[in-house]
Image (spheres, rainbow, N blue to C red):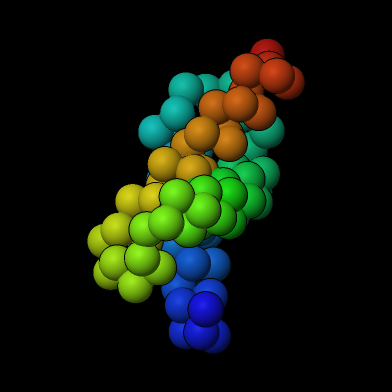
Length: 86
């Protein structure tokens, strides 16, 4: 993985965390944690994507989609395991 691809995954993860935090239901720990969890979800989604044998050079749209799905998944798990009262 090149430095450009890694940087793109990081930026996509931050953006995906922001978007996933907005899309998922209320009750989270705040925007900062949604962005951090989005970054983690992006990394998990990327690792899963590569482990399934898909090409890492699929394009920007695929990277953002995988990052968003990973971020939304991690945020949903966090909110299911540690719900907060809003």
